[in-house]
Image 1 (cartoon, rainbow, N blue to C red):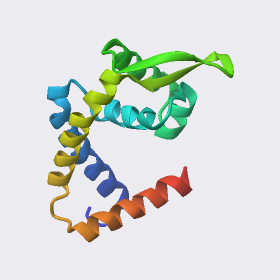
Image 2 (tube, one colour):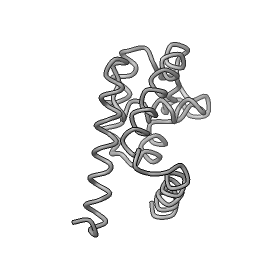
Image 3 (tube, rainbow, N blue to C red):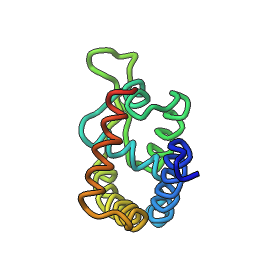
Image 4 (tube, rainbow, N blue to C red):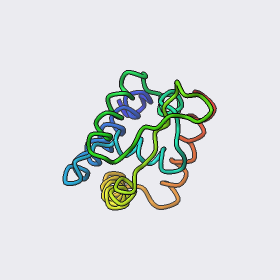
Amino acid sequence: MTEDLGFLLARTSGMVVRAANGALEPHRLRARHLTLMRLVDRAALSQREISTNLGLDPSNVVNLIDELEAAKLISRSPDPRDRRTRLIALTESGRAHLAGAQDAAIQATNETIGALSAPERRQLIALLAKIVTTGA
């Protein structure tokens, strides 16, 4: 099994997500919530852009947005260029919440991949980023 790339990626992903979800529990978030919050912290995006960036089905994105909006961590507003489109942005409360949650998730992830040295971590991130940006 240790030479099966699909298995290794899935198993590692599961380990990282479980660790992050555990660390995010006190923040009442899950890893997907945090990922979406990080994405819209840079700039307001449409639900379609979020779906594309996260590689998620639009219906799953709507559920995540609904949950974060109910918690007042993000807001929806009309796009001034297209009133049919809603832009999703982090609220001030969301921005404040993001900092602590992000630190907790990073620490949990670092503990999960603790067997890797710092250069190995950087290399793994670079390789995975290459796959995600060129293979999507």
